[in-house]
Image (spheres, rainbow, N blue to C red):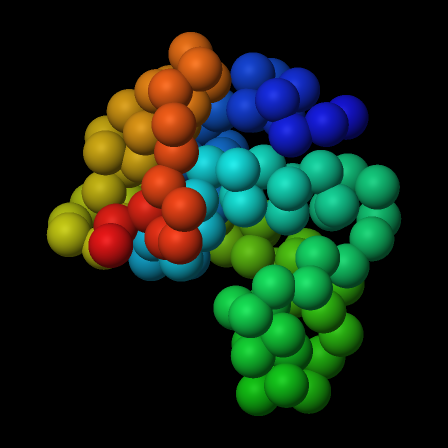
Length: 107
């Protein structure tokens, strides 16, 4: 599955992963992380690598935990840095061909 397939098939998961990352992920970045997870491959981004180093776990395991955390805490994604409604609106904008943020979702 490519980035657009993930955005179209899992828009809510993409939005929740943006929230779990506190806006670090863009919609495209979150979609790429999910695609890597589905392939069973590590996704080497700054957030995952930092988490792996601090937790002394593999980047692959970080990806599993990040997605699990995004789903598990989905009902808590409220507030400035983790607002699901804003993340989902951003994902929908990108899915419809709009330009996504370049660096991070909230900055």
